[in-house]
Amino acid sequence: MTELRISQKEFDLFRDFIYKEVGISLSDKKIGLVQSRLSKRLKALGLSSYDDYYYYIQDHKEEEIFHLISAISTNVTSFFREEPQWAYLRENINTIFASTRKIRIWSAACSSGEEPYSIAIFLKENLDHYKEYDIKILATDISKKVLEKAISGRYVAKDIAGLPKHILQRYFDIDKRDPQAPYAIKEDLKAQITFRMFNLVYDDFSIFKNRFDFIFCRNVMIYFDGSSQMKLVSNFHKILSENGLLFIGHSESLTRNNKEFKTVRPSIYERI
Ligand SMILES: C[S@@+](CC[C@H](N)C(=O)[O-])C[C@H]1O[C@@H](n2cnc3c(N)ncnc32)[C@H](O)[C@@H]1O
Image (cartoon, rainbow, N blue to C red):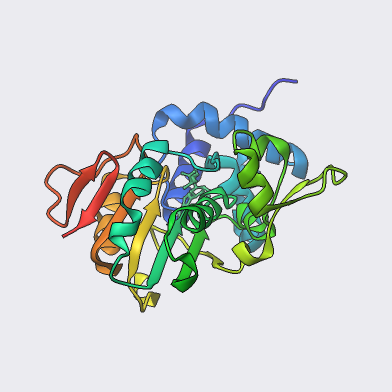
């Protein structure tokens, strides 16, 4: 079936709205992507133009914004993504936390939860004297839909593909008769993680009263424009502890003249 064409004027309406509400900056090149993603939603709602959909969103903002976010942003993620960062942490984690027994980590833009669960599993596997530590992980995303999956902690075979057998046995309850989600994160691991909605571009960072040792903000800054990225990195600086680490995606970088962080490894930065 042929897709309904989006006009430049309609695209501009959505582009401005998405920037204002989500912070995602869409270039002209994204017109095809926006058309193909939104046309599915138009069809589901029985609407006959993108204009109509735009006004439908204004009338049903509360519920519809989540569909819009899911349609335009990519939620792709996986367990233990960005292997070089885990390799760095395997070498250094015990030195980093040698003189403290309290660990606070934020997985910002956590998508469906694979990132914060990887962090929790990693710590349990690699931290000496693990039981002595008070560990809390905050995991946030702008999308209610992905957060629901994250909170459920339930995954299908393709989500856990590549995880070693011993990790599956230790950290997942496996019920292969459950076709919806045969792999469920064990409750004690889930208990370490608090999931919340948070918009990295527009929400207020002053809500964070305690400092984080690590912030993972991977594969999301790429969707923001330069000024939003700079503001975000500066906000991270304010809420990271001294020498705290910021992890970003391998295809992202901090601006060269950033004076608030120094490079530890590509895509790993230390707060100055
Ligand atoms: C590609 S995923 C990255 C997930 C994970 N960090 C990783 O690297 O595997 C990007 C996530 O960013 C979220 N996102 C997009 N815009 C956001 C915003 N303004 N504030 C917070 N999260 C946002 C999306 O909902 C999506 O789940």
